[in-house]
Image (tube, rainbow, N blue to C red; front, top):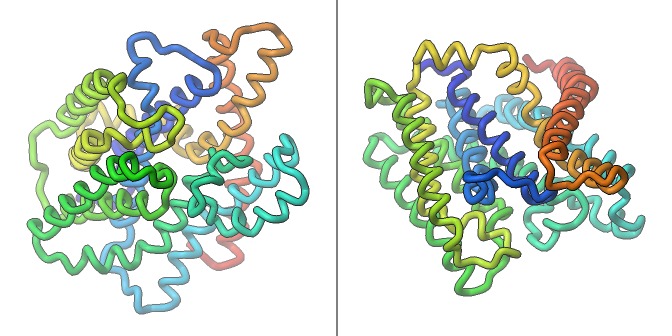
Length: 358
């Protein structure tokens, strides 16, 4: 497998971002998506894709790294931190200044937790300030911290059978965890960094398997598309039959017994895709540009829905209207572009130069 950037997987990441945006539009604006509403109502399940993809792609770039080399280890952590932390830090303070959700005393108390990216270790902080939109940063930083250990563990698995056994074990844990959460009324697992790190590890294992195999089928992209459509049908049917309370974030992982194998197979098959049609789509300027602002687009949602809600209240336009949803998307896109060019890109450039990173 070519270990440079795999564009079909990047296209999956973009689709996931858009599905999560649609989910947030339904949650914050009451947007309806017609026959797809039941599916979009579970759009938060696509966070599974983000963590699995992160593990998959990072493994491709760091397989067989010498983690006993302290300089290499520091280099890895520094690059990962620079890729996300400056933007997170800027938006953290911007959100607090613009919306002022907390008192000065509350901000001072919670500041060390949020600066260290530890908010996801406290499930009750999910609804506090911007943490409903930045919890994944906390989980992702934890996954980055564990990656060298995960890579060493996976490197020690010499056979495909060993990898599959560990994949099955992780799947069982992830599938049963929501049921345990429901029966014993434990804290939410949705934003739990330990729970998400298992999804990340699953992505690492998938990459290990994929790098040691030939393409398993003749048309992997087509098979991935069939699985995606089948997932839409099955999850739309299951959605009304959820067993976890609608006010509990864990409801978004209650169908992971279905989601995880579907998402794992979609990622696996797409990683082998060399379809000329798919590659051309992936290389379109619009797709490449959206890929570059993907993280900023995620963060921009913290701002755009609040702004649109206020604008709708002033103008009398219903938040449930298509105009409100379209306006939210355009605003989110514009904010993401601003964040990318004014903060993310220059911050990376400056910090990479300071620390002599390639």
